[in-house]
Length: 283
Image (tube, rainbow, N blue to C red; front, side):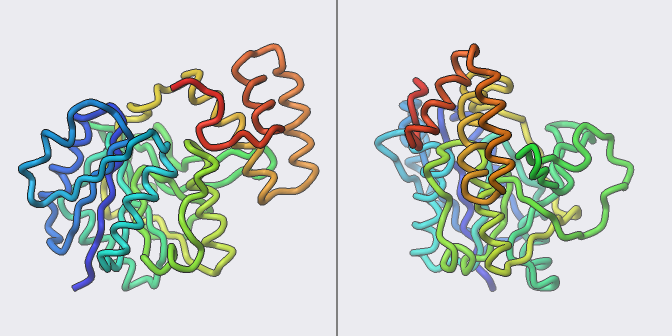
């Protein structure tokens, strides 16, 4: 039986994290190791999980962001010899059969990176049914976003890009291409990882039979200055790694047009100064 390491990264959303791991613990697939990583939240999560023998708790001494924090858990899972890594946002819960389905589909379809169908919490409204990547605008686009599910995205299909909200990956992918690029800290690290995986010949699949429910942007705040800073800076980092000079120049022109906006101005300056990772945004 293949072993799955589930990684849940907490940053000041203790109750959501516990709800997420409880959903994993109810899975029909039983060969699971759960790793809960805390990004120096100071919310007492470690104390609350002390009695949980089914949870491996890892306490980071600083906030390493999505990329760095998940890397800590992924590396630990691979050290433990898992065959698959399932990265799950703390604001996401899994259907009890989701992990079992993902394991079976990975084998049947010879797939290396798999995303389930993701609904908004407590609804039949789609949050994710695969992903396209608009290279001209450097934006990942969720297929089916905000649509009611009438079975229109019910086939297993290859996907251009991945979401990190619920990402199932063969351990060999990390062993071959490395981990998330922690220069991103937050946002675009999953697209970077997906692009590198495809360049290395790995296969990305969307699996609609596996279901996850997601509360969007619970840790960062939808539309917040934090989102604005990291997305602005990281679009330029991503473009500098993968996209044409024409696209990079277009982003620079966009940044100059937005220079009167303090958050975007700082993001642009930090990109030019190569101030990556946490950068200069006060969290």
